[in-house]
Length: 170
Ligand code: FES
Ligand code: FES
Image 1: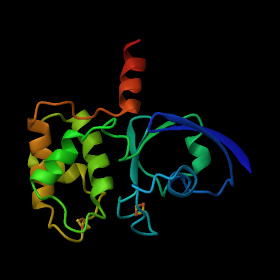
Image 2: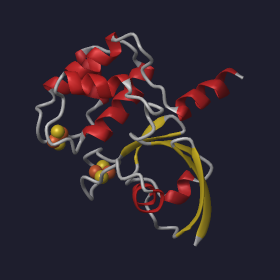
Image 3: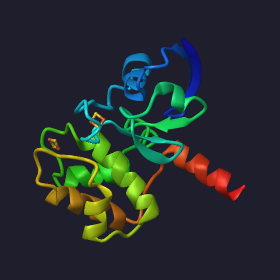
């Protein structure tokens, strides 16, 4: 077992984990963040996307021990207790059906909007190409990301992103 310390959605956790434990299993089974789903076993679908130190990662492709010392934000912490603009936009644009891809789609979109605050449709499609949706045909997802970008509210309000920004400017 290896001891790791990770901040998840603003709360610090220290746990002994097996070196082979995937971050997604740590988040779901140890920390209890079941809002992050597992959609495949091939690292293809992106449903498990979270932010690690402000960057989106597929948490099924990262070992929990690799997250030691990191700040992880899941869909449950993205809005800091409120609805994130992307969550509102996904609801308003009917950008989900079964919803299985939605947490990962929103986490990837939040990362995209941080780098591209006013993305074109092409940039959105390229930015989300690592996230698969079996239901929507993507049209409304693209619309929702555009709507969130145009809402004029912060593209990403996660604590990790704020910390990263503070670190970059200090
Ligand atoms: Fe991680 Fe599919 S569950 S990419
Ligand atoms: Fe069902 Fe995307 S809404 S997989």
